[in-house]
Image (tube, rainbow, N blue to C red; front, top):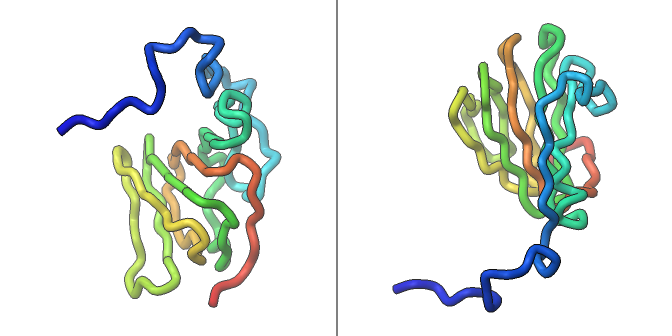
Length: 142
């Protein structure tokens, strides 16, 4: 059984719900303005393309991981992590064992659930997708 389209289509580009946007890979677009000093960030332009419904960042390690991030949670509706290179390990509130995410794997992180990044490889590189684009990160767990 096939799903019915949400709108009559195909749409002309000017009527699409998001913008056509290409974000090329340029090292100059990486910056260090973010919550973690051991990584750098590159905005992939999804917030602009979706009027703030989604944000996507390319994140890569630039220094050794020296200590856990501490327990925190994000006030958002969806949070996804796709590992391009290396690995990252989390603890999640309510999950007894740590969760290691390796290259080629995708993690759907439950929005609003407290977590702690406990380890990462020195070559970590990932794509992080969040909904909405504008959200708050708060410390603590239940």
